[in-house]
Length: 299
Picture (spheres, rainbow, N blue to C red):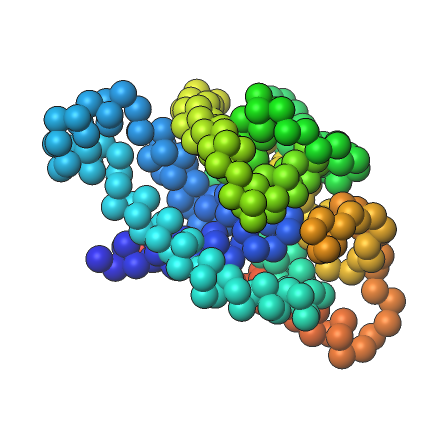
């Protein structure tokens, strides 16, 4: 029961991360050591799981899909969305520098701990790391596309959007903005209750979850070091988005709300209370991950 409670808390942390632009639940899953297990559990919803459901063999289905693990993690994420994540959203809107600082420290130190899980650094791993950094950084310089309600493209948005949420360092909602369909699918379709668009988008998301989880599971099994190096690169590249001291340089208005596309980064030169607190929050983020790692070692 204690283990499931800890998984529940990790799920809460994943939910909170999804509230902060540029931080994904996948990043937290990787930091807290449940990423590979999460991917493999999602992958287990296959033909075997379907046959077990048809046979009403619930016990075998639960064991095959690692269902209790998924319930604990996603249960925490759902609870977070309606409780703690709302608090973090308020804090982010009112004290952005401090929240950015905390997550910057958290992500910065996690790069070291995640990188340590790579058993062998070789040419392939280094190339994967650099590729991951380049991909993550490139997302900050891509201009948003125009809105497109073609159903095939909407299905594609579902696949890409959910895949982005599963990858550490990449934001699914940010990817939808770049594809031009954030407002169409997450605002207009919801408020207008456009069943066709929502159904196609949901179908693409479901297809993306199961197909992408199979791909990631295979990569982690066959090329674990290179895959972890690539994911570490994604996280490293996301530091450019999470850097606390920045000013908005490019944004778009979606349904009356500003969505940031690009920032101008700068380094603080003044010594004042605001910068002192921000620096303290970075240190707190570093200590938080360090404490989690030490707790894991003790267990």
